Amino acid sequence: MYDAIVIGSRCAGAPTAMLLARKGRRVLVVDRATFPSDVLSGHSIQPAGVARLDRWGLLGRVRATGAPFTSAVRFDFGPVVLEGTPTAVDGIDSIVCIRRTILDSLLADAAEEAGAEVRTGFTVKELIVEQGRVVGIRGRDACGTSVAERASVVIGADGVHSFVARTVNAPTYHERPAAGGCVYSYWKGVDIQATELYVRPRRFMVALPTNDGLTMVAQNVAIDDLAAYRQDIEAAWDADLATIPHLANRLRTAQRVERFRMTPETRGFFRVAGGPGWALVGDAGYHKDPITAQGMSDAFRDAELLADAVDTGLARDDLDAALVGYQQARDEVGLPMYEHTCQLARVEQPPPAEVQALIGALAGNPAQISRFLGIMAGSVPVSEFFSPESIGEIFAAAA
Image (cartoon, rainbow, N blue to C red; front, side):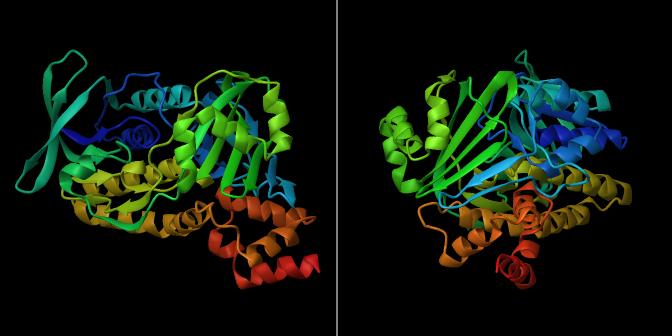
């Protein structure tokens, strides 16, 4: 009998299992994948997520992979270019862009070292439900053997199309339709020293260095324009890239080393995060457009929240109430950035005049640029930056 069974051992499930195991809980983690293996992802861990890796004692391992850390950000809006470093989180102002083939293996290893039992190549076939409560799983292990395991709670860390969420019929709320899609690939031989962001009509492009001397370049495309990418992805990419000479000139002399990939799922939603004997974490419980690159940092944050809730609930023999508290905490901290992201994801709409004026007012003000970049870094709350007092200070300084 386990305290917790976690389905999915990537950037939400493995940290949840690791943190529970460090609290002395008996944890089983299963994943149908074997590692190392890749997954669609933006790769970027914002400073708030990097700070958690540091707190967990894993930052040194991430650095040892050779993944580049970049503090400098270049945010190109066309008429205005903002350059600076985000406000730090616990002394950390760097983004790290690490390939998922490396990160997910690292996190699964950390969970196992903490005492969690990790079984890869394991396919979950059903949840065991007794008297309306989830009490375990049935599935097949890597050898094809039928297995049943029981636990006080089964945690779905199994992505946006979560099997756990579907099985328990977890309701969704705060739903937002997909506003676009994201296309990305990797280039060798690009001179890049900062995280580069480009805003153009109906497009949002990102370039940043990743493992093995490669540069990942990703483009968010308005949903009505995705048909052109599906018809001829290379021609559509080249046409859009031409609108950004600062980046296009460097990619033209570089070598693309992998195929283009397109994210199939950018809709936004929250799901009820827990119920009798079950809980959800990561994209299984909360998902939004990748344009603000918050997914992995959010998964780390929610893993902490859930691990604390499960440990407290088991200790007090009041797990269901603890899971209600977990959902409330997750929503309170996640909703402001969720709404901000949904607004930014509508790239088919130009920024309102007042936003364009604000961007112009930030130019030449390093302290306020750092605060602005701190929104995505996770160091400056959305509500704080866009408060009337904050906006007033920015325009007063510009005047």
